[in-house]
Length: 206
Image (cartoon, rainbow, N blue to C red; front, side):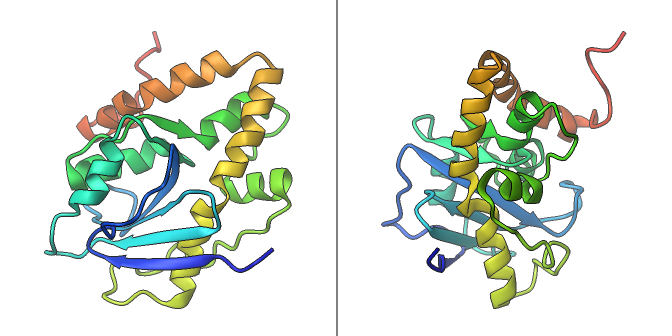
């Protein structure tokens, strides 16, 4: 397998960047509380071996091209654990990402033989790819990102298209595609509930 191509964009996507009908998306933040911890990085890939890393600059320009892509209803956005990412994006940028696909939800519906649904486990089992998580807790708010951080961010999106394809086949085989699609459509509401103050509440419970 050839080495991935990583392109860093400061502040916003370059004007000539396109992703086709589906783009893999992930975020890096200063922590797990979107009201406290700012959005630092948004990484994207068309599944073609190239990762575009958008560094969101503190006090910098509004990422208008990135926001337009996230809101573009003609482009499917593929996440792993979309619930967190779309909440962080909505809180920071004021745009709700749609439509979305979540490989974590798809995995939980399709891979009921395991409770291991992390991206690292999915990449290993489904694609035979080993992902490193060593940079997960590093300082993403730094003015200059290290090569190790860029490589980590890239690998979180480079394989999502392929993982989605395999999970789609499993969902169809088990007759659960409709459940997955309904769950994906609910994700923007779930993210807004998280931001409103209902992160741990099961709104369907008695």
